[in-house]
Amino acid sequence: MIGEHKIFEIASKTEFETASLDVFRHQYRHNKVYREFCDYLRMAPPKVNQRSEIPFLPIGFFKTKRILSNTRAPEMVFTSSGTTGSSTSMHFVTDMGTYRRSYKQAFEQFYGPIEGYCVLALLPSYLERKGSSLIFMVDDLIEKSKHPDSGFYLDDLEGLSLKLQRLDAQGTTVLLIGVSFALLDLVENHSFKLRNTTIMETGGMKGRRKELIREELHAILQKGFGVDRIHSEYGMTELLSQAYSKGNGIFHTPLWMDVLIRDTEDPMKILDKGQTGGINIIDLANINSCSFIATQDLGKRYEDGSFEVLGRFDHSDIRGCNLMVL
Figure 1 (cartoon, one colour):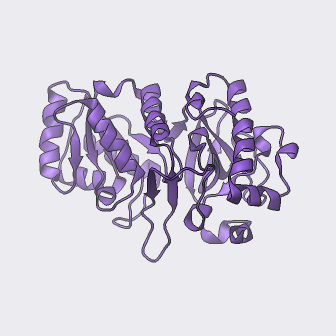
Figure 2: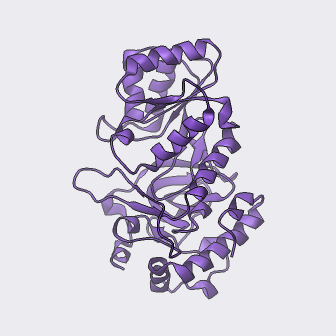
C-alpha cells in the first residue's frame, strides 16, 4: 500500500496510474461505503485494471455517509456551506498533515514558495461559519507567508482597498484570494491599477448576487482591478487537493490529482478529451476517505491534462441517483 505521504512524490503518469490502482484496492478493502458502492456496480478489484475503470463515488454520499478508509478518529471534520434547507457535506479527516502538505505543495508547484507573498483574503461567507477547509488552508498560508500585512478581511473593504493599493505601489508581491461576490463588491466601490498583485477567485455567489458565467465575471474583475487575467482556485469540502487556473478558466492539477470526464447518460463511460460531461476527480490526498469522486460539475478535459469547468448539473440531469440509497 502506498504511504499517506508517498503520494506527494509521484513524478510521472505511470507512477500515478500505479498509485491510483493501489489506493483503489486499499479503499475497496477498508472503506465499507465505497466497497458496497463498487459491489453494487459489480466492479471489484479483479475487474479493474486501469484507472478509467475505477468506480467514482457520487459526491452526494458525503452528505449522508461517513466516508472513511481507516479506523482512526478524525482530527478534523470539514463541512460545506450548503444552501438554506439543504444538507451539508462532511469530510472526516484523520491526518491533517496530509491536507497541510497537499495544499502547500500544490500552491508551490504553481506559484512558488508562499513566503514570497503577502496574502490578503476576502472570504466573508466562509469566515462567517465553522468547518471551512478553505479558511483552514488560507489561514495557514497567511501564517506561512510571514508577511506582517497578510490577513483576512470581512467587511472593511475601505481598509482592504487602501492596503492593497499601498502594497502594490511598493512593489510587494500580493495574492488577493476572494469569493466572487466579495471581489465584485470591492471593485464596484474602488478602482485599481495593480501591477504586482495576483487576483484569485474561489468561485461562488453564495446567494448574494446573480450568478455570472466565468467570462463575464472575469471581464468585470479584470477591468476593476486593472489586471490582464484573473486566477482561479478549484476545490471543495470533499477534496484535500486544489487545482489552479492562471487565466482563461483552464485548470491544472497537482501531480497526485487528475480529472476524467464521464458521460452524462452513462456514469461508467469515460469520454474522450475535448468532450463535455461530468467531472470525475482522482485526488490521492483523499487516501483516508475516498480518492475517486464523481462531482456535480460539468466540464471538459484537454490533451495536456488541463480541464475547464462549464457549469453544474441540474438536479434533473443527474443519472444514477438511485445509487444514493446504498
